[in-house]
Image (cartoon, protein in one colour):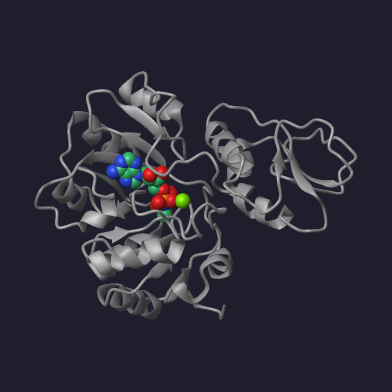
Length: 319
Ligand code: TXA
Ligand code: MG
């Protein structure tokens, strides 16, 4: 696969990216969570090109990115919960699933044929500048092949998608490093569909107790068990790593014995760990050892999202 073009942030690069998007092409751009693979959310062919570039099943809907709350309100029906969450967390790593407006103009393929639409305002200056310049709502899933580890640098995007993307805007490493929290607000019960950059504790401070979706249902369409998967097998909650394993460590007390060690956070800071998680999973995914062992990580705060991604990365793979 030949190398796609990576452009450093500049007025010219943003103008070029906006022109490509308006012409129906795909552009990868940084957000505070992960890099997104952006396309015109109002164009059926552009949205189909996103699914094709990722190898993503067409029933796994995409998030639509907008620059302002007013723009979001033109796409979906807000209620009091949505208004309170937007006020508190936007721009930021929160995606809200809301009833889609009949006249929203968003391509049906974007929401996989559902009556709902996922919307978010990203908190990254380059993403916001691009949204303003393109003057389009942008459908943007994480910019990785479906099922693999999400990208937190421009280079990760280039390695995964190659020339399937017309241009990659480089905004450096993503500050949060894990995807947005997805909250379902289409029914009377508020559902936590995907843990992410906004913690459950922070959401509950605004809304009160949240419900998890029924355990026998997939969380959100496409949230199949195996996801975020490196090529090597993962072993979780490990206190005694094998000499044939690389160790993904957390905290100051690291057990001996692994072939190689990367520490997500020596001081045990969960936010630092989140920001490094995907880059370290990629770095440890080498044929030099037989597996990746992961130390236990606390479930509090953004730890819940870290453990969610690790469980999916460790889940049995479809063969
Ligand atoms: O942080 C993020 O959310 C990143 C950046 C680029 O914004 N995007 C991202 O997109 O993670 P993606 O496509 O990798 O994940 C979107 C998630 C999926 O689990 C999808 O099923 C869910 O959001 N989703 C999208 N639309 C939905 C809808 N209408 N109803 C329920 N879930 C939905
Ligand atoms: Mg993704």
